[in-house]
Length: 137
Image (cartoon, rainbow, N blue to C red):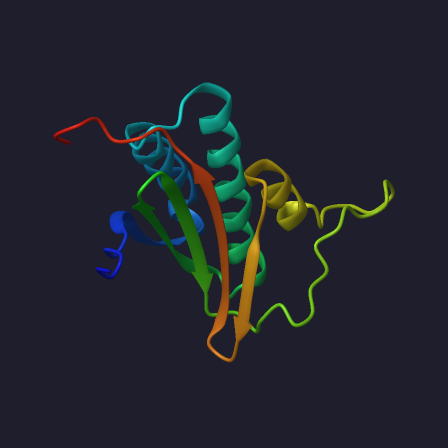
C-alpha cells in the first residue's frame, strides 16, 4: 500500500499585529479557492482570525499561519513562540468575563481544535471538510 501523499501547502505566511488583516484576507481567498463557500468560509476565516489574534495577544506578538489541503480536508495551523498554553481549558467563560473566548470560538466554528504546547510555543490546528478538487486540477 503506497504511503499517503503529503498535504499541499496552499498558504504559509508570518504575521505580527500589522499583518492581521492581510492574513485574514489571504485565508479567505485561499480557503475559498480550496472549496469553502458562504457560511462555511465565513466560519473558517473567523476561526483562523481568532487563532491569529490570540497568537498576537498571548503568543509573543507574532506567529505563522499555514493552510494545507490533503484530499478533502483543509487544515490551518497557527503557531507562535509564546510561553505556551499549559493546560489551557477551552471553555466558554462566564458572561461577566471580558474576552477569553477566542479558542472556544475557533473550536466551535471549525468543529474542533487541537492545541500543541511546548517549549517553542503553541500550535493551534483546525480542519474542515471541503468539496473535492475538480478532475484534472
